[in-house]
Length: 425
DNA sequence: TCTGGGGTCCTAGGACCC
DNA sequence: TCTGGGGTCCTAGGACCC
Image 1 (cartoon, rainbow, N blue to C red):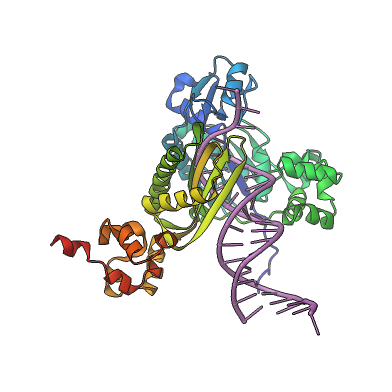
Image 2 (image 1 turned 135 degrees about the vertical axis):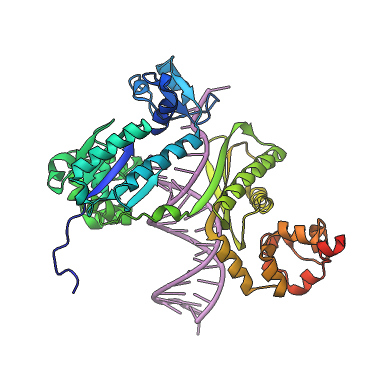
């Protein structure tokens, strides 16, 4: 009985905040308004790059991702600020709260942009009226400018919101595609970066119009599944739904840092890993998840970057465990060359409650029911005392192999330890 | 004295299993 | 003597986005 009526076309909005970080700073400190302002990755430090800049700064040629020193050369009076993520998160929450006033179908994509499906919100007015209302409200309540795209799907809405900045509203209909979209270069497309654009050029495709008519076999062989996808998009086809839940499904949590100078001293690098591990652990805990795979990133002096990861038999969250695996991976794969950047990332995240349930399968009898945290070396250490490493060695248990994998400790092994609380009694 | 930090998704090879 | 085909998991790298 489905599809008895022709499916109604969707109405999708893409709301995109204009130079978000810079605008938030201006909203907090209006004396910044009208000035060329840049938010730089590392603040004033060396190797900083422009993360966002105000439109006044753009007039001087300052652009996102430009190294700070270059931006200052172009614009000597540039006001440079370090990012204040707390502020941006607060502003972001305010913005999404406003969006949800119009519909529940709000999908945040990043801190400063989101999609809305207002197909069923017609009682609030026409799509254009709704967009105008949203824009006005965000400006009045948060003092922040945004651009909005209105279209029948995500891709076109995203493309539309990009067309008038700042404070634009753009409607992009299917019938506008040949005149508005097709003359543009493929690199203007969301999803087509430098490499893909280059590859397309080699098969004689320059414009989105040419891509729309491209040979699917050829596109697929050159670009894989993405080739098919971008061809569809070029034809204005995009059936992805607006999914309000998608934001809560994290896939990874990581922290990385570019070192103030290139370092080749292992001791120093280990200290950096420890501090990264701390951050990652705090974030894992805040999100109530554990990492089943841990990875490190090493960028060398020459910017060559490698990643190394390890699937863990048991998920981890404690900073000692994160640090331990990270150092292990680093020690195993570092070639001794000077390091520019280090990073630690947790993948395959599992919810805390689920992780504990999984453990119950291996439950160490009543012990495990009371103390499901037994899955990590650090909690083992807490429970069985600081000497667990040594004792494990005495028992010929390979702790390196078993970091974070207490399940491979057997019950007898665990019982062989006096319990800490009993010791203290 | 060039190029941050947070992510997602896709691909491809090898190990391993049936 | 010679060697299929499919599937999953793990790892590493690359492209892209904000």
